[in-house]
Amino acid sequence: MPSRDFSLHGAIDLGARQAAARKQQERRAQGGGTPAGTGAGGAAAEYVVDVTDQTFNAEVVERSQSVPVLVDFWAEWCGPCKQLSPILEKLAAEAAGKWILAKVDIDANPQLGAYMQQMGVRGIPFVAAVVAGQLLPFLNGAAPEAQVRQAIDQLFEALVKEGLLLEAPEPGEPGDTPAVDPVRQQAEDALQRGDLDGAKAAFEQMLASDPRDAGAKQGLAAVELSRRVRDLDPERVLREAAEKPGDVQTQISAADVEIAAGRLEQAFERLLSAVRSSAGDDRDAARRHLLSLFDLLPPDDPRVTKARRSLQSALF
Figure 1 (cartoon, helix red, strand yellow):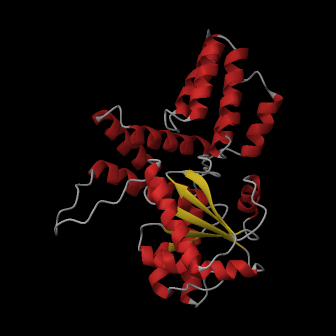
Figure 2 (tube, helix red, strand yellow):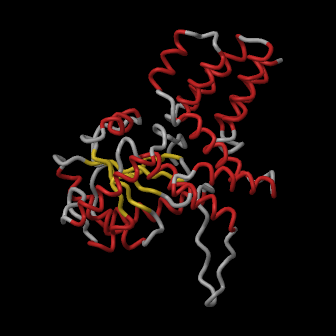
Figure 3 (tube, helix red, strand yellow):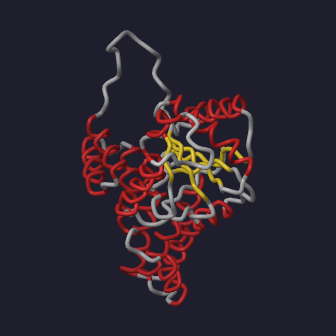
């Protein structure tokens, strides 16, 4: 599978999210829509969403905590995009909520376009899958419907195999459905609404019941990170961190900005450097913050394992 790096791509902006939703509704009411139109008509509307630089985190990353999101990077001038888009919209409608299609116009959203290039992608159409906040490169270039359908099926099989997605239960007798944890559902619903306080409370309740709940621990860590970075100016924070290498609190904020942008290893190394170069309370603050960032990833993630070894070396 591709890299498990994830991105919180900026602060959650509920006002921008609501404005984007209104704009999307207006476009559909006027017969507009995505570059090739909504191939599945109104049936696709609730499963296809236009996202922007400002709404990517709320509409894609947070939503991916409860349902996989395929992100279609496109542009009006891109001919192959107009071939692939209606196929994706049709399949999203058929999936009926199994996954959501998010569409990004890279010309109108330069930050997301630049982020796509940072992943090593040099052309469009390009489709990424975001699952539980983890961004996975998926499709590069247009393809026939049968091939796209097969690729999506293979993606879901791989996600289940890697434990990033629960396998769909086998059909049973009518009414024979597994019970849904109401607190977990409460957390997922809060994330979809962009309600970080509500999600935090739900995740904390889950951990109070089971301190070993890895999913709740990751969810809480992601919420806490979102709360810390939503009012930060990334460029200013990183500039100040370069100007004040000995200021541990500034380095902690810079690490948050880096990890929110998907630069996990840089964030880990920044805090490891702070641990090595500081002492007393500052050293302990850097250590504790680094440990809190480990909770964003599965405990067996090789980057966490490597950083833990480096932390032990720095401390002892």
